[in-house]
Image (cartoon, rainbow, N blue to C red; front, top):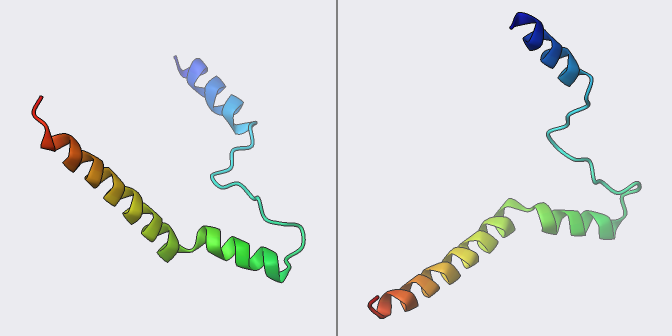
Length: 68
């Protein structure tokens, strides 16, 4: 059992595992900076999620209107 455990650990240590992808542009231009800021802005992302949540709430309210 220990042998299998150590084999699995050493096998997975050989793989390169990254938690985050590095999809940054090679050179940062003003346009790249602005586009990156738009995509990764926390306030804008929370507004997008709020909008999607409101759309789902609307669909749920419409479905609740009619009995099953």
